[in-house]
Length: 274
Image (cartoon, rainbow, N blue to C red; front, side, top):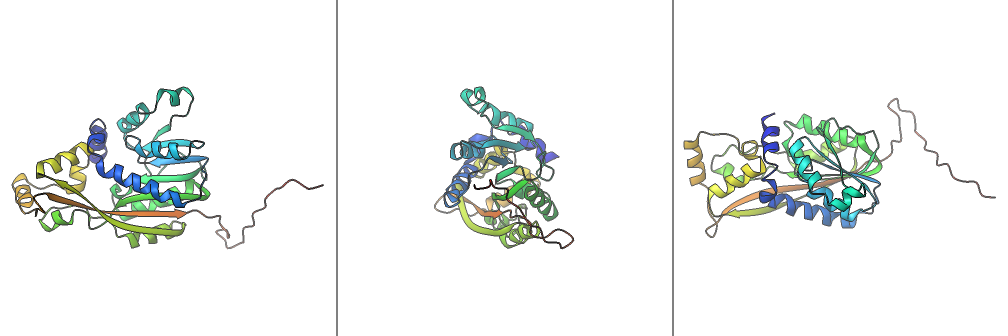
């Protein structure tokens, strides 16, 4: 609940500090260049102020866009950033406030789910497994889940200095969860991205503007934080903040057997030739 309040309160300042999210979003979009997909409906889950859904709308202009976030102020910002012409034509993203584990969407109703740097905020591995199961439910057969989240080597320099940085799952565990949720052919990739700061204060200010400072870094008495930040090693005069980014995509395929083991046969009704 505290994390939701902090993220909601950060809606006005989020864009000023969302450098990492924008870069990761651009890299996610580039990965879609290799995917043949023409979605009728798409959803940005954990949309924040809507950068991702706007990227998807530009790429798939015929698709119906949906922006989902549990923070109402973020949804309001995403709605406000839609152009007046889009709103006039009814092409602005539909917005829904929801938890990723209980989406207000019909089964099989979405062809593409996008989620950029949100899923790692779920409270424990079981919650992420539940989220994958829910995303598998709402995806149509042949639909794609495309996401990025933080990995376990995120901010390892601050961990080494004694900061209680939030723990994150390994990409192999995430891949296993996708298979367990019923996804097919999961592909996992990892890369390290580094942001640099002149001072610890600038880094902490960015995390506050994003609404994730306590959620990411944990809490320590200020005197202890001073020791941690003093031990943060510089590189060429800058403080490096390294983030492990895990990218994943997986497909939903049509079931071939029912829960009781019986085979499922799909019939395609076609017009008769004369």
